[in-house]
Image (cartoon, rainbow, N blue to C red; front, side, top):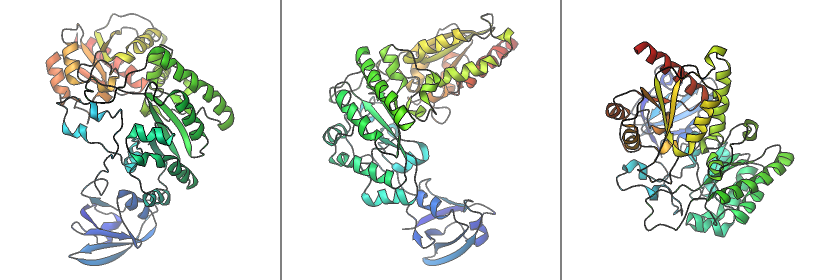
Length: 441
């Protein structure tokens, strides 16, 4: 196995040693290099031997550098290998629920533990062999993010649609014994893996030292489920039952482990019609990318930034330009209440929760709003500028339906401003737009 080097950073240790573009990396320190994980781990030493293939001949280079300093090699792909695809047939797979016109890149099902380490993607471990598990431990790849869904082996096999799902608890125990920590998630379906099954999952996961947290997320169902398993969204009383079960364990585990461990996502509280818990309930917000505490952190950061404003600016006086916030239906009431609690003088803001016609009305999160829905539903709205969360966009400019940000701006004929997901980002955007629009007027 070797990897084509497409460029070498000028002045880097590899460049100084004489390695050049067109060489093929074969070994570092005598060990074969499988992928970028191996490359990073093996090249972290102060002294190392790098073997490359040049015109078919093996050449060894002795290199000295600072520990952890980059070697300076660049390859054809960031992972130095292809993405590992998913072998599961999950009952609730979101990719299987995409509308017919969705772009092909959205239909790729990946389940790559390396992306879990590098980007926080959740993986099921069903395609991880025992040998690969030992490589994870040897390379100290921690923390990982693991989709558990349930720990009952028969139920997990049913939910994931593969007999490989049965191996999970042995894999987690081995990772923990090897010093690897991991965050877990359960995508919950009413009557399937909640109730007694969830009780078992929490009990068994919380007994593993390497398990740091467990996020609970309600199943996401689109309007494109023809021919798929008969699943449904949570009713308010069912969502409340999940939260109540979680709270019983959270109190117990806080006393026993020093962490609440179990964290229902914001979506569960919204579906239950219950308030989002206070800031301390989320500890270090380690599961925020799974929608756990996202709204609470937004509120906390917005309030802290708001409190630093001069008192004269912290009064309700909607005399400025008309600003709109377009968001998913689930977050609308919360954002509206937050802006009422922390008013900004001059800020004349209206929140517009949008219905998702692209994926279906049961999809209510802001991050899945498309450009078509934004342009269609905000057309004709009397406002001077529209704020959206930047998580609606890919690469900073592309919505999920392939509309660009500029196309939406052209359709609306007004500024559309992506805002970072931190509370101070929203406050700064409001202040800037308020001032900018006043100057324009």
